[in-house]
Image (cartoon, rainbow, N blue to C red):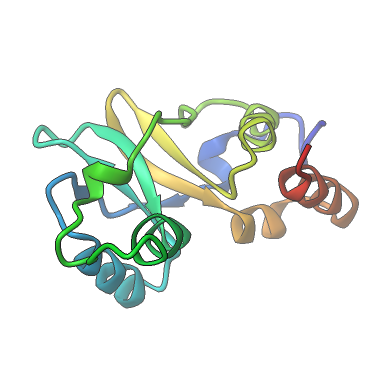
Length: 144
């Protein structure tokens, strides 16, 4: 899939300044931060500020609450798995490809080991032509 202007990068599309959630923070606190920031995902960082993954509102519901766990007792680091990310200078097409391949709706933009922004579906909706956005949504939501 090609995306937008051929010279657009992750930096052009991302929402800068994503707040990092420490790995030791509880999921109830993560949910409060998501509510306060009006976001559906937060990058999770280790004690040195290096991003190790993300946690989504869906993770909290499906992997914690629905499993009968107490979100005040489960830590963000307990739910984070392999990090999928791009660098700020990565072509937008690469970001879309990673999101499609991993069927994820939010993608951290990482410089060095630190998160500098996030790309969400809303960000893509502002930058992609309708046909490309529809194709992206179809591929991300397709289960196969």
